[in-house]
Image (tube, helix red, strand yellow):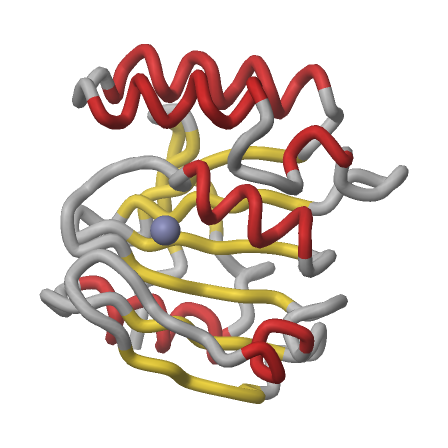
Length: 165
Ligand SMILES: [Zn+2]
């Protein structure tokens, strides 16, 4: 069973608000060397589990449209922030909340803004995401995270991280 303590910004916090289904799946995905996507209903009942390769999970058109108003969790076998593609998929398919787990136990969360996802984040060709892509390509993950936080702030997207182990 997962610990009920975690760290947010280096402060120890209780994780009671995390649903056990979410934590159990996050712990299972954490050390996988391939990506897996878990789709939950807002009450954390699992709707779909899809395994992918080391850097992507392919979904059919039908599966993509089933993401709307749901929560998704996926792992990044190589530590790194939400990718431009992750952000674009959240905006395009109107996902309510996205969780991402890294092998080091860092769980990031991105919430749909109250006003909905901005159109600027829907397509990978948009400037906002192209900038992120360039930073990712250059392996500048520190600057990438700074930019991601800036985008989250600009579009009022809740974006935060917690360490679950
Ligand atoms: Zn991803």
